[in-house]
Image (cartoon, rainbow, N blue to C red; front, side, top):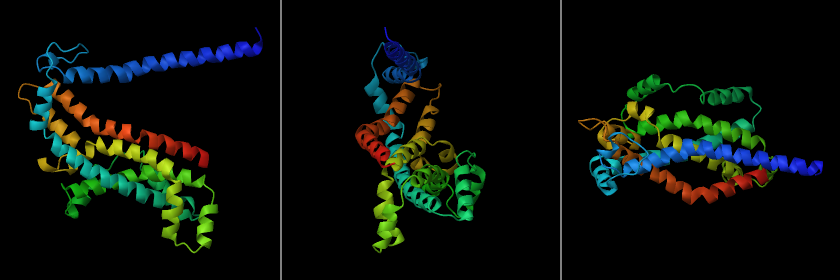
Length: 284
């Protein structure tokens, strides 16, 4: 057997070993928790008192679903989560990409300092107390608008960090050509720069949606009133509403319903995301 054959066989063996290891990790970290979520959401309260991976002895998913929709405030939480997530994602992507364009194309030291300060906000813990104090003084404490503004301010740094590095890899030719054609700064950004940012903005949008949709810490301190609660808050209150402990069957059913919007979004958007990433690789 030649040396090239030995090398090829060794590479196939290493690839097979990696696939096996990844499959084992996925089984314990993804498949097993997902299976536990599904089977316990179908159980009665007695069967799910101690969550296990066993199949239910009595199927009660529809009863659990009715209880969650009727008493859990799921529809209210779903509407409020959409009401928060959509404007936050739009504002963060727009403001972050505009700031990133300025940071990537400038030679000003002050703007570079501002960029590093915004990038530093990614690793710093959220300043919840000053944020609440600021919202109180502006009369926005406990409101959905105040919560949205706080999320925008704390999430835009990630978008700036991702997008600035991507813009720096793009050539200046298209921007210079549009400037010679008489385009304004806004026209240059909207018609030239923003379409080029589609791949990285898709990735940033996914990260932001997941982060905002699952946010509990900020919502717990900034949202007041049962009618304004998002899905994480309604789930938390519903899980602790039982007089005799947590009703795990209803909690698992609630978690399943909470994950469905994200799952549907992934199913319908995965082709656009993959195509956007492919275009980004070609453009870069």
